[in-house]
Image 1: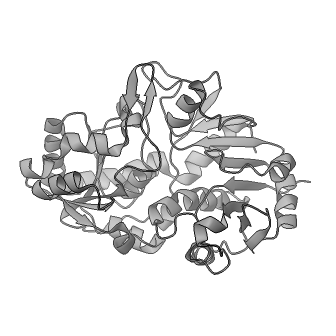
Image 2: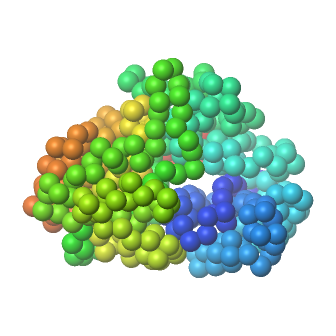
Image 3: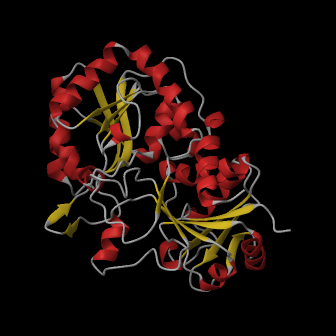
Length: 381
């Protein structure tokens, strides 16, 4: 009988020291392992990414260290993109064997395009963690990241529903929530004195022009609330990946009272990332413009971790009220005035919102529940 297994394709190695990105994959890997699956992360690098040498690169050291710390040393393979051969973890022959026996491949944003491995997998499931970008690329004829997949899963909870302007591309989308392995994210007592967030100012994608509208990035939404710290009694800190050339935005952030810290220093490892979130008062979630403008229902994997840690989330609305209970633990806003009100409410009744945050995580984002529901919708035992 085939092994109860799942391959997860995505890149941890390409972003060493970006622990928030790393946790995206850890939640899926460890969550499926909790359900009894044999898991395998398939990752790849090019030598150009590593100054010519993958084997001694910081990328490889980071990946290996993370996998070992979470008991996944025998559950990953890092491939050389050019040759297809494994340079760390399981060898290619073992990857092909596990691919044949696995229940399915979860291909994050179509990351894996190795035809031999894909050919061994009985079922290819596309996981869309950036709703709107892939769909619009396809509609505009720029790229088709969905081609060759059998099932289509998105964390955009409103995709396919009235009011969401993300095109479905004629595909039968299955929506899912961001999973959190709760035992690794215990509720923490106390908390810090500031709202925090971890992220990049722009991210890996460019804005998209689609049907007469420009769908933007996080920077475009953040500029709408630059005055927030000056209008509340709350303190705000950003572990922000922002290029030093963004002088105008850096000046505006400083003038409006935002404290900036280097995310590689405060959240450069999975454990440091956990400590940073636990040491926060609450999270301010500012999504990419794409998610807000399309009413996608996107909710950050990072925000789910804040909730699990007992840290309230003040989130710019992406259509969340149609999907989740909001008002306690999770507060939403669409305007600067609503953001001010939400921040003051969390500061005024922090204990209430902290308890509600953990309760929301247990009810909605528990990986056991999220992944069991997803497997049922995929028809996988």
